[in-house]
Length: 210
Image (cartoon, rainbow, N blue to C red; front, side, top):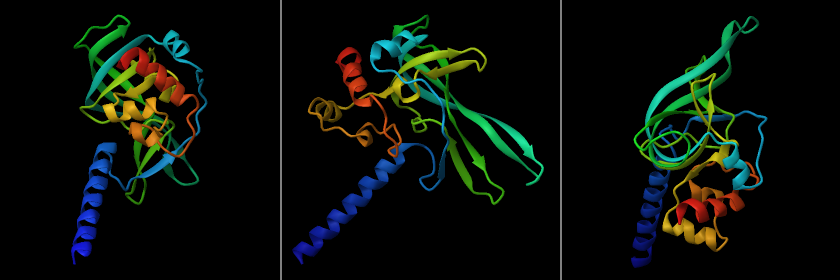
């Protein structure tokens, strides 16, 4: 009986942990269909190359979802509008400045390459061309950003290479021991290889997180 009781308690604890992690991953419904699009972009081999491309480098807290912009085209065969490109706008508040003409407390517009599309059957899709999950409101990140004048906001340099979650002590230890995995960062999608990620994270830790 004791063993059965212990097993049940372990199962309940696992369900609670899974539930907490799902909630933390993003504010998106856990069952939403994720549609990944291919995107051509430049990737960088080291932190210095990324920093050179940046307009600003800051730590910032994600404060508010400002909505999304989606371009569409009418498909005459299907007789409906179909999306061609879109992005979501977030307001972020600067908490520390490393580069650029911004100040602590400034509120900036961050552009993330995803949008929510509702299909004709009412089901929603998260359509993304990024390796970065939708950001968590209230979370702080290190952001290496480039200003996009045509869009009136900032994008991350090299997509996933320009945004880093603030690591916990546990994650810091795993990175230093070479035991960290992408899922430990809780910010990137897990279904594709991310070139140079771990070497870059080591550089970021040395320069910005120690």
